[in-house]
Image 1 (cartoon, rainbow, N blue to C red):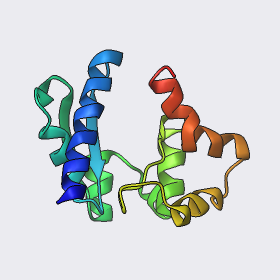
Image 2: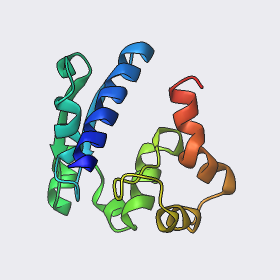
Image 3: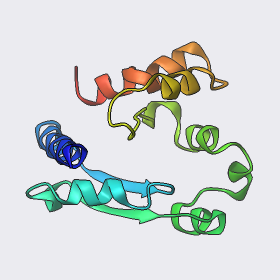
Length: 132
């Protein structure tokens, strides 16, 4: 229950930041099965910033619903997203155990990317986005 309250609080904070920075959300989820969109939708006045979400579990659905190319889906998932969307549009986050965890950070650091790109994904893009 404490984690749910924390996540609800974080969703509210994301909504506040979206309002302050004049941003909006749209989600594309696979393994999380829409949980991120649900959390964002529970914040007060969510419709001002949440445009919607897509759950794309299967590869054919990812091609049809998200416009990803079949060739890109043959590459490891995370690298596929990075290549398709561009490094400047990727933010790193972990959802369990709801705090930064070392295995997730080590996984990101092992990605076959330039150090500059890893720095953008791990914190640089978020700082730029939130004007920090």
